[in-house]
Image 1 (tube, rainbow, N blue to C red):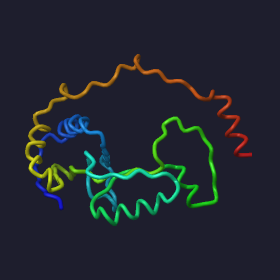
Image 2: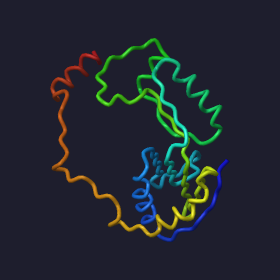
Image 3: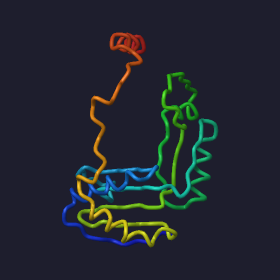
Image 4: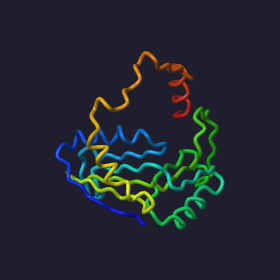
Length: 178
């Protein structure tokens, strides 16, 4: 079960920036922002889910069955991803591309804390066990300023190493298309 409380904010841009900064303290974070897009399938402008209560990781074999079981047992919001390589479980396909990240083929988590924004209304939906933290978290977010946020790493500290050169990439793509 989840507890729910809503607040109205005046400075939505500032609140969203502070909310992103606040979310950096958690290991599991999903941020979905419509960026002003409206459509028949959008219910919220922003959804933030943080702090896993439960989670699953699965590799290709039985990944979809694992997810189905997890969803049935959880019966709550879950957030996560399916990797591209799971296509091999659905079709008679194979791939052997380099995977330098080693992420699992499937990862989903049930967040302890979900924050939904629609217009200027912010709704906190927390699992019962952390429900007492909603007003404290809202106050903490409201007190944050942009200067409190973690500053990005200067570009000079980032080193990117190519695995493939541009000409070789285009040659490979050309061979695949012909």
